[in-house]
Length: 123
Length: 209
Image (cartoon, rainbow over all chains, first blue to last red; front, side, top):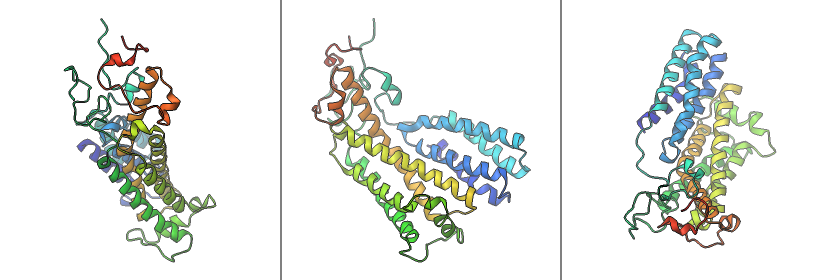
């Protein structure tokens, strides 16, 4: 849960970073204002245990944010903002956090013949 | 009704209608009422914004972003369809509340169809909300406080809603493994019995041994 909240905060920060560092109406602004809300929404949904696997979706977004300032030539303020958020998304993707509930094996169990029920071990 | 001591992944008697392998029943009212409440809040917000778009009220509350709400709510994007987008949003929230409320506490296995429709109503609505939030500043350099609030409400409904969808999908998969009609199970006309105790109930269908 803590890792998700940090990721949500980083995503929301990206939405406001262009105004805070004054790079509105630029490519970095569009980039931040697309990546930010998408990452924040995915991290928010991943707070719930049944959707925790969604946290991995922020990994490619984080990698993009780390690379984008060099490739697209961002001003320093924007680059720092992107790097910080990118590192947060990459790191928090690997932090699963606790899940108190069990969901019959979760979404992957839909590949099992009988989700939620332990079949006798093959012998 | 503790089962046979193997325990793991089984219903430990907490609730008779808990799906096998789950710690709680996703269809109980304690889980569904908060989602219905969020949908009603969303209906109120979107209804207010829609009333502005329809010209029923002259101004819209905007504490942070100047004329941001005005700009966003009268933009081309918001009027792409014959009906303004907030009005459609309000209708979607009503659909969320209605499909969230229909059915009893066993509905994940007695009415998979309504659970699936509920999931479809909640999921894409949240996605569209986020899309609109993205378009606002990128296309119009404006934010809209209540539009953002509506997006937060939409996204907050997804996590608590999808667990019920998962329970229904798992139930349908078990039905298929049992060799029973998926169609009848989907519409809930095949009884609410489920594999709860021993896998031998699978009656020799694929997977059980």
